[in-house]
Length: 185
Image (tube, rainbow, N blue to C red; front, side, top):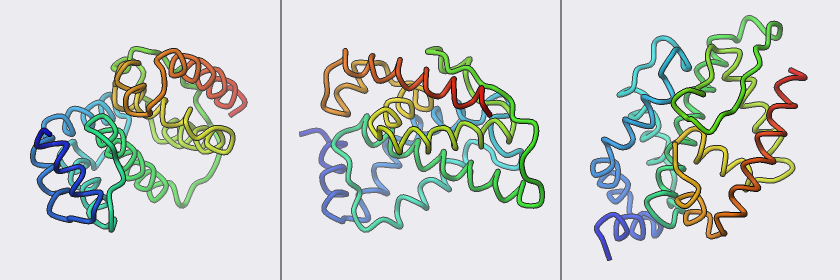
């Protein structure tokens, strides 16, 4: 069993120190994910890559147990925590102004070219993902792993314990749903 797998197992049993060690071992990968999220203004202006990684860490260490299966699943979980940090900061920044000017985003398979731009778009994508979660939670996980983390279809299939074709179908359905939801805005 590899060190990361052992740490994931320990974190799942409530070992708080295991999450610390996981973050240290995967820090470069987590910074890559955070950088992708913040690239091209797709996050709150005062937040940088390092701060986003650290804020997501603070959220994860508050959990009594970390329920992940492998490295890909951990990275997706960390990306979800990062998304939560960004959304919370955007909501805080927009607390005094609501609605108006929703900008449409097109989800593309090229993660680096598809990051949401601007606070309104971040919230629109987040709200569309919440609506999708009410229909199919697995599709949301596929979007998070593909769009936000940049995992390929095989890695997502492994993390979700489903076939690659299932992931591909979920990705297409989710993209269609999100496109329609964001177009209605």
